[in-house]
Length: 160
Image 1 (cartoon, rainbow, N blue to C red):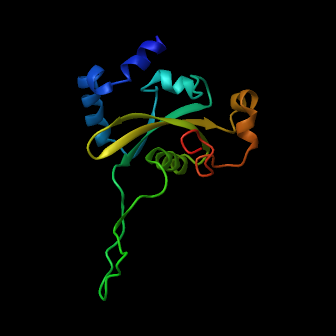
Image 2 (image 1 turned 180 degrees about the vertical axis):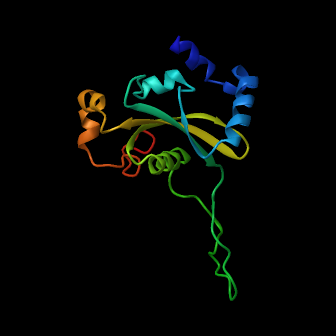
Image 3 (image 1 turned 30 degrees about the horizontal axis):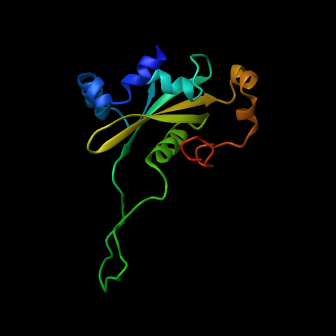
């Protein structure tokens, strides 16, 4: 089954056309970071370590496309190198993981994956793990021993 899901997601615009359009219309109305009950892409979530058990949860995050806009220099001369649009130096996916990590301070970001985009935004789903949960302490001790903030320290697959 997971192979078939992965095959559909190879070209979502063609295979999931109407469904994907409807999803994006709903997601636009939601908050920037929204908790999700089930993964949109089960195959990708499972391959990144998601399990449907206690201690795991998912969050969808919306990221604005395009570059960061710097304020215009006010008054006086304009330096030759005074550009206004600069890339942030990290990927949109990593920025999304950091937003999710700030929203859920008690959880740790395990990984994230792409779920859709329109003209203005990209959406990613982040897999979150509760470090204090007894099930996680037993099955994933490596995530409880390390320092907090995997997303900020570049320890997730997208930021490595």
